[in-house]
Length: 245
Image (cartoon, rainbow, N blue to C red):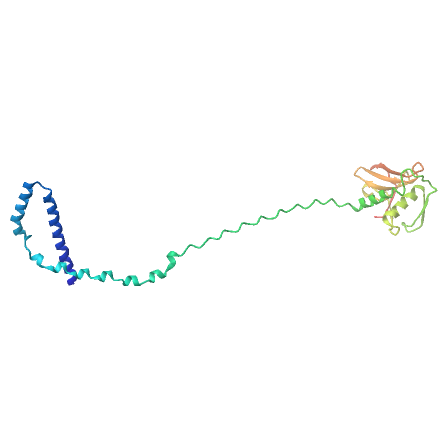
């Protein structure tokens, strides 16, 4: 409490000194006659104001060095390094790992277009055409050319045109493959590899190809020779068929 009062008195004396210094500076810049008048008035009134009273000068309480105590300069706060222990404010921000660049998906190669499967009928037609080397176009062929055929379940002695058709049928289907007879067949029922009876049951030929409008045949004893590639219209009269399908 005493320290607080002493400090307040010290501040009061310092304010009085400040006012005196300001007044002295003002007087120094005034004209001589004004300065003297002011000085005279100051002397006249100094007694009433008590400025010349040296009693305040005898009181050294304002000059008490107690306020100069180094308690405010206590280094105790500097001893506490606890604030320095927390490096959170100085913690560097974590480095952001860049996202890995997505690996481009491999280009999917288009699957090669598969060729349409050859039908089992077309396969037989290809086999028949290969036999053209063994039985070439124009080869002499008459009823003297015979062949024993067993596909119908009995032994058939085939002559001329029938002989060539039965030989070719065994070559592509095998001799053990059974055959059946279809009477009054329609064009829709005809298949590649079938043996046709034509011209009022007087001539035979084997089918080597078929379209929606005609049949392609191979035949013997056609003008006494082997002939490949004659076309029959879908409207051609067929007496009956021997088929192995």
